[in-house]
Length: 232
Figure (cartoon, rainbow, N blue to C red):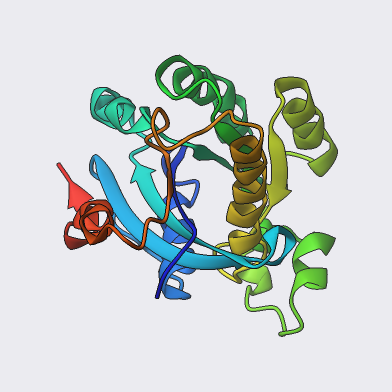
């Protein structure tokens, strides 16, 4: 299947916020209740269609980075050249939200200055009275009352932080799939807008590559990473 653009994304944030689960939900449409901790970086790719952009087909190349300090020197190297970033926190963990400032500063120091970042509040399925997860899915709730936890970060607080920092914002659930693909879509739409403005181009932006059907070597080079699912 052909695509119009290849976009490089990084997924960053504290450990145990569900970054790997978001990636697995995006690429495989499944949920792992107890995924192994990410060691270094893991990779996944996905084709999505953007109706708002004349049904352009986008290939997402996503690098899920470890959330522990010991791997930061490794993960920083993957920030370079990224066009998009999912900055993930757990809505039931105040600490993970507070630490998004540190992760954001790190990304801005090492990534493309024009990178599009979307703040993602994950695990809304764990909140007792979260209305966003219920309105997004017609299926019955899958989280029992015994596993529910108290929300520690309100939607309004996260929205304000995102607005102050110039970030996109969305709340999601890797378990139910609520808003997972939409998070990538929103970021992709903004990136494509930057392409139209000339902010990103093929020659100087490694995180954005337009499809070139006449050159099959280009496509092969872009897909080399799919043979390796993890690093370090």
